[in-house]
View: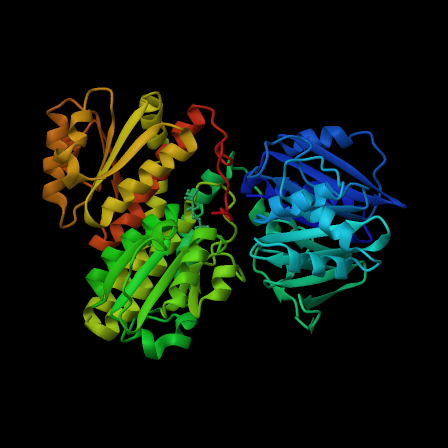
Length: 608
Ligand code: M6R
């Protein structure tokens, strides 16, 4: 969703901000803008559409300041127009402000201001915030922001500059992430690390209800009640090259191909092959309680939710725990009973998904203990959970989540194995699991080596407008994830179904025009999947099978076959999802879609 980057230092802000905005493009946006201090005034440029439109507006202009704020906007209040793009100003052009989040009481504040004759130029909630800071300003910008924070309801990550305060950027946060970057030539404030990773990997996370003042020589943090806070910078492991394409045409393809490494990273230092038990240091703070846990609820959205659905089957196989998986966006409408020692496990790449955050906050109110599996270090979910495990997968830039899904499945398996070894699994079972986990990176490489073959299948079928994905048990969520991947990047309609449901409705759809991707590895559901494939074949539906290497039976029944190496039942999803990701990618590419930034989508969904 919206992205923030600001800079104050010794270098020219213009190129730093434009470059930062480009790094934020993956979050999804429909307009962009920046404001740069130049002497005694502030230059404002905004444009609808891609950053390149903003660059065109600035081209040939003398914009030379070293202090500036910039923003990519994903419209919530008001259409994507230039007037609605950020930065927003007060009516006198004193305050320039960028904002992520939603000001919930903006209408009542606006009414009150309009009564006093204040003139508005946009339909946004953000403009109200700019006007409010201007009204509160009496010479001290952080005080004006602090006062405004007490008057607004809702969420914000904001950065603001004032015409009469020549050497400061003030930033504040409530509910929308904001990070300070410390470089050798100045200070950054951004909504995520990728906007500044080319300049620094030293960051300070601002917490909710805190604000900070940035100058060219340093920064100071304080609470909304003006209590000063000392916080040291942390070093993030992301590198500048992680945000580059490195020869791949799209981030989605690059990230699909990174999976042997990201699966390895999810296991690195966490396996004890001889003991048949993983080590998860991040879980240790709650070990005494979690080792006896009998009730675990996974909450997540989108692809992370489907990872949770696989996780449910894996935990049920390896542990004694009663499992539930809930869409975070539905969680608060459920009447869930939490027996004593219930854990809630949030899965999230970004660690900032609004629904997932709301779900864990609700669960906490009901007395549950909170765990997280999160990729972005220092993100809200990682901080609000009591214990957890990081993916260490590097930034995922493509809007379609790929490498994080397989990383989440790997970590869920490690967690289930850790608890299972304590609750019921023998040493032999533990050792067998770890051996199979260790083979995964090479097995994923073997699946990826069929990329040309998968592209050829996509060439044959990419013009079909309806697809079906079928799987059972461990691979039922892979059918849903395969369908989601295809829809979100290629805009082809696809359904993911539990194969056992076929006869209850979807079989009516089968005809020679609709391809079915049947996920049919040699697991304990194999015979049932063969029956489903036969049912589709007898109705002349084209079958693209994902099957275990050397499976002649499935080969004979199917129109196309993509082979995956043999593994344990509960690890097949990690291999079976790779062909689904590649099929989605190649169909989207053949259809010339905007693969890394599909229409209407944002990488990190920070509003409900
Ligand atoms: O950052 P999160 O994992 O919490 O994000 C959850 C979903 O928004 C995300 O997985 C979304 O469904 C992706 N676009 C799927 O590819």
